[in-house]
Image 1: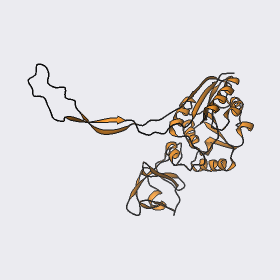
Image 2: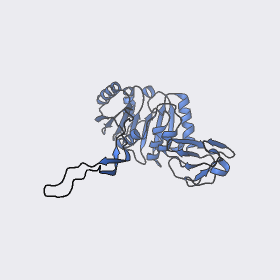
Image 3: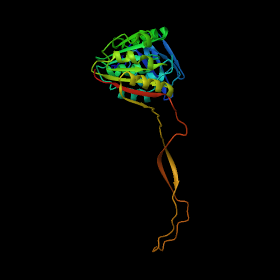
Image 4: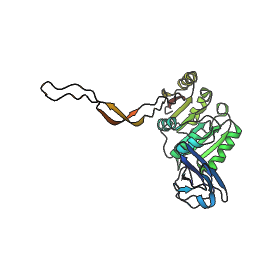
Length: 293
């Protein structure tokens, strides 16, 4: 099992996603002789998981059942253990697109945090790309390295425990793109510029406050970046439901002798309605291009 390569059969040591419902999932590490408790009873790893195909329907000890799913960056984002605030799929999709990431890309990231964005980047740049991720907090950096090894993507990533604003990314002139999710991204623009290739590349900064965006944009301009833009992504999912709508009675036509219909005529149809509540602001995404030297 790897987050960047699909496997058919569950093996010991794999990370799997236990799907109990759309609002109830959890990741577990498969270990011989271990058990996992769910609302439907226990799952025995040796007999119920090891050797089974990903996507299998597994019956628990109480008679209920769950699905065992292959992990993906999207599933990991909604199930990972939170060590920090994380980026979700809506922002991640735009970051991946706007940074022009592809297989073979070299990417710098700070900070690593809980690894939500890191896993999506790794899948995109595999099998020949590389991610250089910097985390200021020592315990979070150590935990991230452990997870990358368990998820079998450690060969694609280098984790550094240092202050990116003072020490940079540890590389020079080899990155295609740089992503910043730190309190003061303007202090890391110099290091971001030096990390990007001489032929140019893209940079993105995620900030929750507009004051951070202003200072970051000023730093980008001072360092010669071009095509600077800031956007905010809001996701609004419409609900599809069945509704009954009354038909108006316009009366008989002028030349018609038909008796007007006085009944309550209605029609049943399916429609999409916007949600009454929705997730609002997460953060601002600022993108810029480093031109060719």
